[in-house]
Image: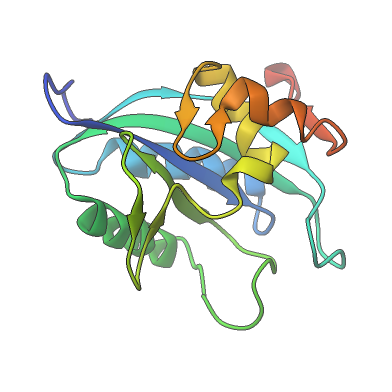
Length: 171
């Protein structure tokens, strides 16, 4: 595990899985994030069960969010997240929104807005996805999503999306 950093940027990473024991996949994702160099995991949310959005012919997802402090630049951090996905058997082929062993998304990187061919921050659709907003709310309800408002405000607009916080004893 990495030691706490005194400097760096706070980044928020979304984790999701609906294949190959999703609870274990997300927990393994927590461990992998804690091993990223030049980074320190400050907090991770509870696990949440959510129905798939878009493509419905797949299992429910397990989702969570981790807050980390990092000195990695966004592009390097994103490449590291993609490498972790690959180690967990993630294949990025076919249509978006399909089943996956582990999905890691760079949701926020400080208060920055980034738009490149490889990376968009804040993550697109973050502001309209309850499965991301509930765990973010748990970690930091007043967090500002650049260009959209606070997590608390955004969550009010997603109240119709069912999200179930998992009971730790049930896992």
